[in-house]
Length: 446
Image (cartoon, rainbow, N blue to C red; front, side):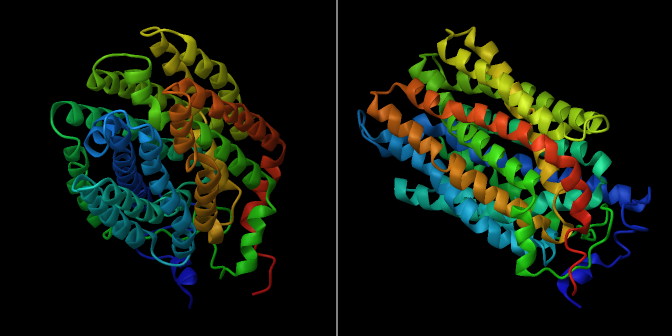
């Protein structure tokens, strides 16, 4: 029996009666504990990513001479280092997640990236810091593709959008906590402690993963999959219009949002001359928590509710948010502070509104046997063509135009509009692709 078939078999730990059913007692308790643990890990994940962004002004003072004309390019490369290792190793871990225990894979990954993050704080030189960010990316690559597939196996399509929205609310909340933690520690202590502080909770959460039961693959879909995956099965992903257009839209969004979010604290503090970096990170973090949390949860609920009336609702909700967010972002660049804070809030709300719906689309239009790989390929695409380059691009343009970061922000902002258009385009395909997903591989003879 293959590992996929073993995972598909019912066990005492995952008391599903039949595909699409979740008995109320045991399975519901396991599902809630699973989501709580995955959410906590995802919070630490994004805290770790954004403590770096918050501490950039302090880190560059330690490793670069004042007036160095290439400092922004080098600091932008730290974000690129993480993303390159993250995106290139994600497909490998996605393939493993389709075949082996996802909880054990995630447990090892969380412990590994937590230790690598602690090593970032110990870096004696810039190049060592660069290497530790590469290591953090490898650790997070094992978690990213596996976590949403566990949620997809625990909750049916009718509830999946709301639950995934709760899981992905860690993006704005964890990012905001990273800004606040990194800013406060860098301002009042030393930036290195911002990396040390995420190590103990990360190791504890990683250990807990080893005690969680593995849900059967496809347990909450129309069929339970004992299907043994072949390489040819992965071609169904590129033949699924909803998957391709969703990935393309997420790539455009990530290109803009990833670059801007990395530089925003420095942009506000130095370029827009708002004093006190700690104060800037605190306000920006608070706005990100409120706008991102509310938008992520409301977006997930709106997608689930509207999908009962419009089959393409997940795409429509996502595309509409981006089209509204584009002018809000442009107004951030021309509005003086403190009034610009209001437009930052509005832009973040619109740009986070798609988080639950777009990830729900990924889960709903892919067969359970290739779902881990589907999320992994999405990670590869959105970072390879998205924010792997944009932080460095914005930094290089800032250096080229004598610190004028508005030039870099404008250069990437057009991708917000592109993402909105791609998602609206995908709406026409979603109903058919969702209905076909559980049966896409079943007609093939084993």
